[in-house]
Length: 217
Image (tube, rainbow, N blue to C red; front, side):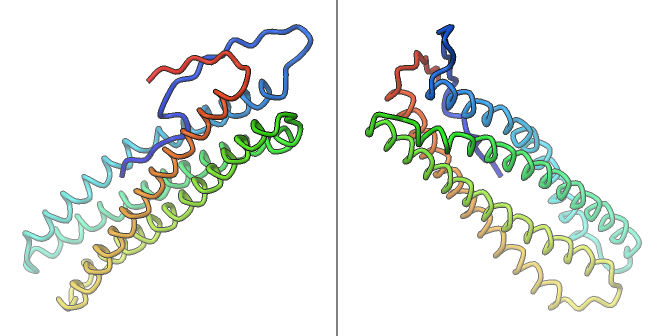
């Protein structure tokens, strides 16, 4: 799964001046960019998650080549996969904590938006807020779908450790896994689209302010 973080579309640089204290928009900028920083842990989980997924796929392929005369080997490989699933759960937890910390930081702009005097700027800020809400809700849906997929994966390997396992039972569980991964893919697409939408609204907000910001792709 490839997912996008808050500031992935561009790097922002701002030159904040003024000895008389920060303006409302400067304070908002600081919260927005701190939210990006807090999502770094989310980003850090993507590569190990992907690696574990690939390793588990190889394990399943190895198991599929074995027969019941090699049940001990099947059990051993299933245990490897179950341990890998637990590692993915841990990474998923860290990922969610990162997203939630970033969202909490982002929400610090809410009282500042009310202080904006220019109606058009306040409207742009409101659109950015809504875009973040949509993105956060999309992430929660993605997280929940992925969590369910882990539960279904776990069930497969638990079944494979049953010596009297019926083939139909295993096939039914495999179908559940496949269907759930389709839901994960769909949820991931929605999350990516909402991330792009948020980035656009954020850039539009910055451009509407008097902040001196440079964007680099």
